[in-house]
Image (tube, rainbow, N blue to C red; front, top):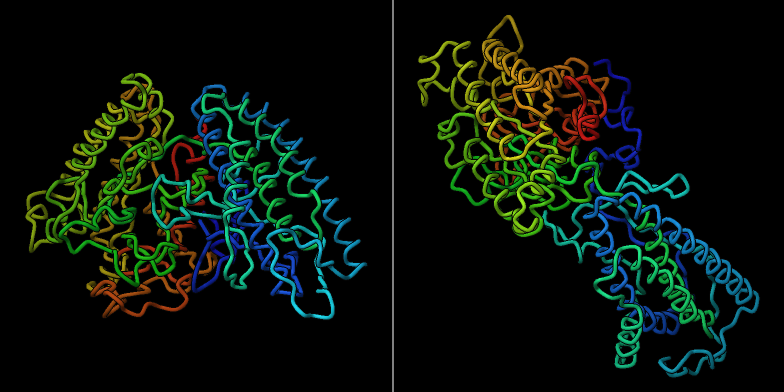
Length: 615
């Protein structure tokens, strides 16, 4: 692959702009799943009289919050209902007209706000008799408070998908991971809009009137639970004019802060209808520490990463990912349009399983004994068994109809990355395993392919139809091996790399066999991780990397003799390193390979992942 940019995070193969819309900083690469911004900026209302104006605005904001929360929950229910129907596109097309009417109403509201602001700005004063029944008692000031407000409404509401219903509905790139800090499916709290509220403390205020009025508005809004999605959307549209009337009736400059909140809320409703589902309904991940996201946290093993500085650049901190931030599959999840990271199998139950799970486990391999030198782990055979149990659990969500379960799984993407530990923590670890003497390099590769073929076939029999399998990377060039290699003819340990090439060659042939009819109806992709890492190393500077042979965090030669220790000081500019520790890539390297694997054929065969998702 010929690099096309001096910056590893410039997106050339990202037509939706879903990755390129985020800034990348060297110390904290918040490229994907960045926290949503708050509603602060040049358009935020700035009241000059903080004591009086903010007091009243707080009361009005608390009054409207129950209504907003109810609308958000209903929007989520409508969205979920629509996603479960086969005619989603038709329903969304019908809702588009409703969205356009909402946008028209928003424009009218915005013009009304501007007119009031201009008039009040010219007048320059707020009469004390317009403060309302919940206002703070008048002070002894001789001059009424003045207000200076920007006429624009400050709204910055995050959405989730890179697609839109039609050309006249703008797409907003995803700007939030799982906002409550968990890799889970519980998004009611995640969907709560974060409003910029006044900071002045309010004392001695009774909320009885606010609560009662809020409940009354909530009852007026609440649609019937059994309404179809289109009816719910119509109900929301019909409610908006009355809500606008309640917001605008008799209000003066004192209530402008609430107008901002209401406008942001209504705009979020309109934008919510422009979202489509992810490109595939679910994403299932099998593998080792390269993609593990916390399944090993509860195991008795040395192969764990739920401590600092692991996760130093990850929004939820040390989650169990073996890198500083996002893994390859985290980046791929975002590119596929998922709003949240795929959760780990170890702590996910319930309806969340329908959207996919991550079964990966650090130190795992194709062979069951692989990784035993590090302690407990979940081998590939066990990961397949865990998936089998999940398939059985899915039946209750499809009324025990296994054909429906099969249809659902047939649309999903399956990712399997295995084999690295079978060499690193088995074949070339002669003090602990005898496979190095029991097999030649070719015989060992053949044995691995035989076992792996059975495991992938088992996934197929359980419903997998769109499968990405990854080659083993250049293990002979990772900092761990460089710290132990004393060869003079090559920078890397080519004995290890040559043995891995034999396995990768057999894996590509296996993909061809599967695609040519051995597994009817399935489509497999071979992801050449070996070449991907080689390309990053040879063209490091073109991608923006400066350090190719040592870890950002570690001890000893190449920072690879001992991997990253708890609370160890990592390098400052992590975006310049290909490797995070003795074994694993940095988030920056993961993102580069994820981009190419998703939208180009540089590392994938016979098609890229985006094309696989569209099948």
